Amino acid sequence: MAYTPFPSSHSFIVLPGQAGRRVKSPSFNPLYRQIRELILQALSAGDWMPGSMIPSEAELSARFGVSQGTVRKAIDELSAEKLLVRLQGKGTFVASHSDTPYRFLRLRPDIGGTQQKYSQTLSCESIAADEKAADALALPVGSPVMQVERILFLNDEPAAFDQIFLSGDNFGELSLEMLCQEQRTLYSVLEWRFGVRMIRAKEKLRAITAGAKIAENLVLSAGDPVLLVERIAYTYGDKAVEWRRSFCRTDRYHYFNELD
Image (cartoon, rainbow, N blue to C red; front, side):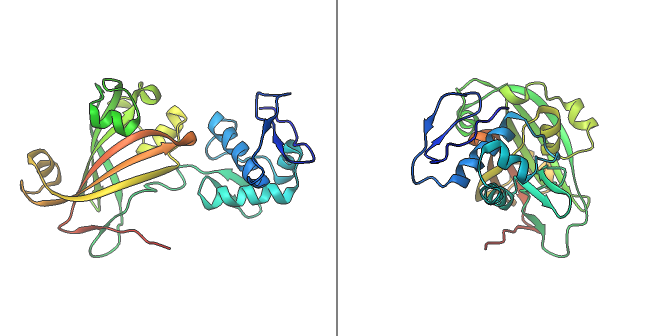
């Protein structure tokens, strides 16, 4: 990806692939935020893959035509957002789900710490998006989506039953065989096989009672209370690529979130 240095006034920004075309930059947008956006564009374009080291601050400073301090501030912000990882004495790397498995998992046992986490995939098939899936993924109703059902185990006990819906545009080649063969978490599979990384998510929680299917998979009785956690996960460009419904046991588990 080619970049054009900023003019000395810093009032314009030249975007990748738009050499010679100046796009006016709002005066209130700090320069380091503009550099942050250019780094995000490079990440989205796959210039630097998950787990790989990005260029040094000096190299990025020369590439963008700004000071190293400006680049450092942009990288600091991306590191705080867990999109980049600084390793002392080694450099700055693109964050990977392999480094932070189960990043969004908030389910905890009531007694003792979780010693072991793994999942069992039950099914993976292409279906037509119903109204709820289409709305969550910002797709037209009837668009192809991949539906994955699985059980999450904590300490060898079924703790959550997941129904996962993935954008068919991004994950149309996903298969049950692939998920069963890979010795990675789901997000790691999606990252390494399809080049799509989940960078943020939003969740909605509510208490419901278990239907027959949920009860069977969680070894509960129909009508037992469960916690429904609905998650929409986004990749670069704020694009929704996953909608998930996690039905979680509440007899020995709770949802934990630490607020700063």
